[in-house]
Length: 336
Ligand code: ADP
Ligand code: F6P
View (cartoon, rainbow, N blue to C red):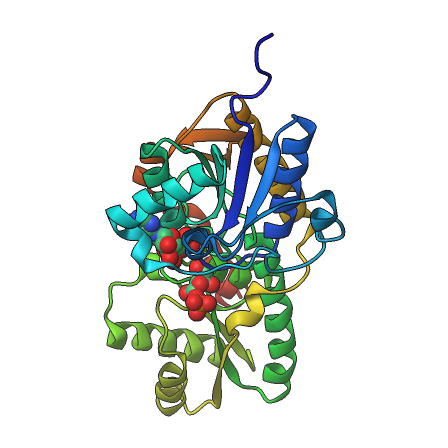
């Protein structure tokens, strides 16, 4: 009789920054595996836990009641030494020792490089994009982005109330290590006047300050009493920017850095559902004998790519969306 699955035991780990929806991904991966007759082992603390053999037999109870929790019940870690070839070989040996012949890696590009290395050592691997930053080239969706944006949007709505009451300017810094997607989405959804993102910043702080001053003075002169600026973490300097802007405009300006609050909280329905489908697909790929793959979501479909190809794919903020977001922030004042 032919074997139903190409793998007997899958391992699941979460790596890099946590993201709301990772638990939904763990749950779906484990339950899909069990439905296919495949054993599941949990690996705590990403590659660091793999190297320390923090590996356990996952049972059904482990995945019960976790779908609505933020964070990751497998914990996560950054493990810089996993970039070293000998360490990767040791990671593969540990997988073999524990009977893990398929591995699900939930994380970002860095985590996928680890999965790529393990695949080269004979462990079948599939990556699932989990990061609030949305900065993975091969996919239009990453686990956690939707929740993070909604959390940040609600915070900005609150800042708007106090900013408007004091007739102030507010700079709100949102996460995104090198990417402006959270800033762009929050800026549009919270109705910010300005959105500053690394993808459209040339590094000239003085020019940026002058643009902000011009924008604030323009809307102020047309009757607007408060001004919201969403700044991406990749640009940073929000406190200094607020001080410089206040000095230049004479308008009271405050900065708020939203920080890690954006990474927590119960995941939105979208994050739970997309995470569940992508994880099921990842397990089915392993069962079909695939390796060195990353799953994603593009053009309305769940898809998968070779990790090498996925890592070479670049994406940029859509220019039309960026221009529209800027126009919407100010248009009511410029037309009339
Ligand atoms: P993300 O996965 O969100 O991009 P990081 O870049 O911090 O987050 O990477 C997470 C982990 O993935 C690292 O701590 C390391 O263990 C592993 N990793 C990152 N880069 C590589 C690499 N070039 N080769 C092997 N493993 C890597
Ligand atoms: O990659 C996700 C992210 O939240 C980035 O937006 C941010 O720059 C980084 O992780 C923060 O990492 P840490 O939690 O290690 O400070």
